[in-house]
Image 1: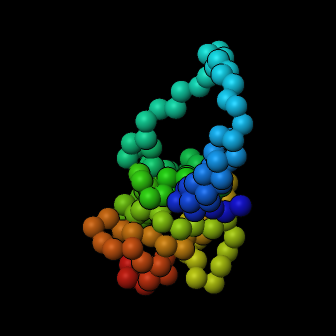
Image 2: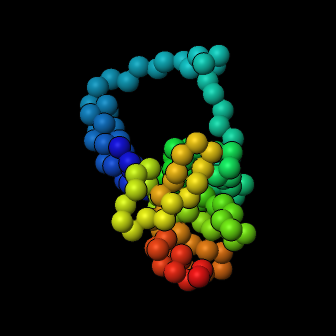
Image 3: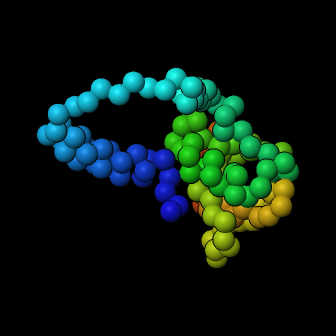
Length: 129
């Protein structure tokens, strides 16, 4: 599925609430955590969302765009301009703007140039000319 973090969050919140109600109907059993299997995730920062199309594939960047929206978001330099990537696609669309990546092409749908408001990628490209 091509869900973004906010979409997945909302869907799982509903599922989690339903599961919690069902779980609480049964007696609870305590299960100790296996500390050897536990993993730690580092805290997200603005730097987490920095991507480099020259060293990353389109799929890697697309996954970050969907996972890190709305915060910290994904930023990259395009023709010397820092741009926040808001919506992307792995397939070409009439309204998309191609961005060459390491082994493939990422199709930009919605961007936010630094210091400006969000816009479609085609609006952004028209303004760059």
